[in-house]
Image (cartoon, rainbow, N blue to C red; front, side, top):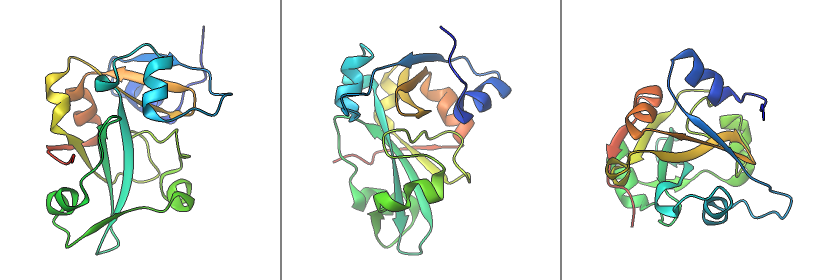
Length: 158
């Protein structure tokens, strides 16, 4: 079945990065990472969520962490060289990224923000992240995600 390409997919195509598209039904409103993992038939340890934060300097940062884990804001601030870090308010996600909550991909945001991948993805052959639309996920190698986003691997989970 053909899918309308998301911005993230177009970027991956342009850079000739191999990926697989997974779709899921979202009419039930269950778009949290653990529910999505079940819907796409993947181990939740392979599924990652994209979190957008703001440092004390008001600079935005993107963190990609396992859906079963929580971002440690102290570790995140240290990784970004900030005094402190807080989550970007939900109401501001679309304004700054171009994506909606539950459909925020680390690839293809309005601007290229400094991106960090939790180092746990090193242990995986492939990882699952949002394709940039609720109901769509992409599977790709962690190294490919790192290349496309310019991300740094760090330990940022609690």
